[in-house]
Length: 171
Image 1: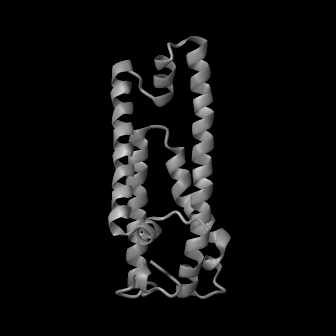
Image 2: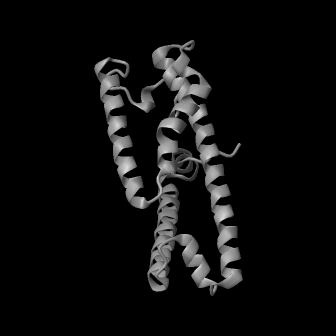
């Protein structure tokens, strides 16, 4: 079966090839974002959709391409969110069950998928500007730190615990 993860990449391709592939993908991502930023500056476009519209000469073709791209971006991001939630549902219930027990309400798959979706993804999706997204991210990261500190202090997460020494975890 196909597995897409960095640990699997490094274990199946080796450390050197895995690092090389990761570096190449990071380079491509950085290059494409730099190109997008440069084009946005040249066209004086405040958003990606306006950039596409201006790059295609405006008018009906530019507007149609911009609308088509908006739908494609939405579908891509929606699919990514679904995939993220599936991974959350596969990975976290056994970890939560290890600490709270198999019959715990918090170890149920739908709870593990719903809580991060409502508490993390929804606030991030609701931001209308990048400035608001930055503020939301700061608040979410502070909440995550508070949860982590509380879990450590109540011994829900024992000292010295890492994902690699959890039962059933293979890294």
